[in-house]
Length: 268
Image (cartoon, rainbow, N blue to C red; front, side):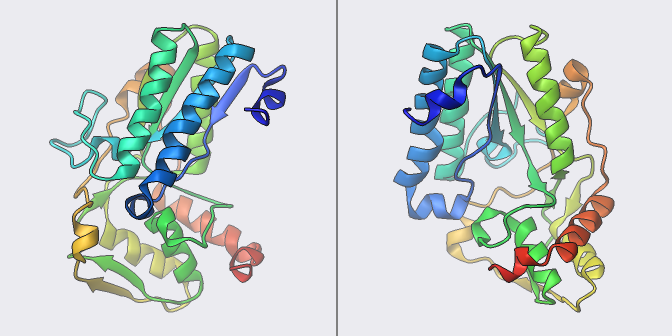
């Protein structure tokens, strides 16, 4: 809190984007995940309520709060049933933001993100998601490992589209255009199989990467969610947001960025 208070001086908007995002690591060290994604969010909200209560707070959550989908595409009315510690903690964190909006009248809004990728993404930790792992490996010409038959579906979201949504959500909350504690899904516009994603990235990588299908480990299969496709119609209707970058164009520009800034790879 002592560090946060000076940062809030004069702030009209607070974007809470930092967090522990690895599902696998959350199962290994659940207490760390809880401290980062639950306790820290509550401390932040209490601090904002005390020193800057009229600031707009835009919080990024995850589609992982839904768990294994019961229907596709997944809208905001879908039950929340996380399959790992990270999903449970992210759900708890976003519920604090919703509560502070509805009970304390703070101008909070929650965005549930799907698989985000783009320039400047951290590539050094495998637990940050399959997309940065694939980016790192195709740039090095290493194999891309896909579990099972590779037919699980995902929608991927370029960081530029995420930033646009953050700005729109903040502006709408500031102008009372959405109710306090509003929650919106944020997904990509295409539903692709993991195998198709891997094959496209291997092609665009141009360094000879091959795609390998591997059997699921018991550890990973227990927390896998199967297919996922996001329904983003609510945020489109409320804020006029929709994804603008097709996956091929987005991943191609991402790979070009890292080629032009090779220190991202050499530093690992």
